[in-house]
Length: 231
Ligand code: MN
Image 1: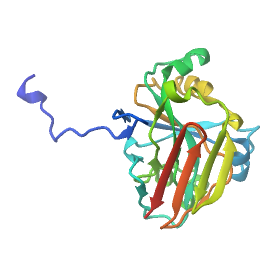
Image 2: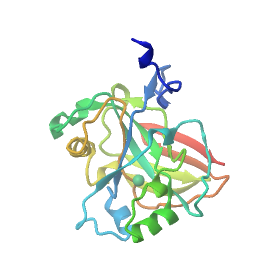
Image 3: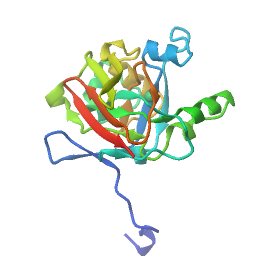
C-alpha cells in the first residue's frame, strides 16, 4: 500500500451488539425496517392492510445501541415506541429464494424502532421523506443477539413491551403479514443483502408516546429481552 492509500481520518469501528451467552460481538452493517407488517398496527396508523402491502425503510447503523440508556431526542414532543423482532444476517445475496432465506440468518433479537411520530406525521402529510422521524440518534436499541443454534427460527410466540411495568404492546409473531423468509426474499430484490445487516420486522399494535424516565422492557418469548431507561 502506498502513502496515497492512507485514510484521511482515522477509521471507525462498526456498531456492535453482544451475542447472548458469549463474548462474541455481532457487527452491524445496515438496518432495514419493515413498515406496517401487522394488520392491527396498520389499521391504528390509519392504513388498510389489504390495500397496501408492507414496505421497507432504513435507519443508520449508528442508531443501533445496546447500553441500557437511550436519550430522548430533541426535535420531538411525541417519541413513540415500536417493539419488533430483529433478524441478524450472517450472509446475504441478491434475489434470495424464500426457501433458502433462513440459511442467511445468524440469530434474532428484540429491538425498538423509536419514532418521532409528530415529525413523521408532518412529513407524510407534506409528501416528504421520513428520515427525520425515524433516524434519531439511538433510535434503534437492540437486545443481545441469540444465535439460531440456541433459539431456532421463531415463527410464533409473544412479542411484548412493558413501560413502567405496564404492558403496552402485545402481539404474536404469527401475525406478521410478511414472515421472516418472505421479508428476506423481498428485501433481496431491492438490495444485495450482506453479513451484518439487521432487519426490524415491524411492530404489533399499541404504539404510543414515551416520557423521559420511562423504564422499558421488551421481550420476544424464548428469544430475547431488552431492558432500558429513557433519559
Ligand atoms: Mn417499525
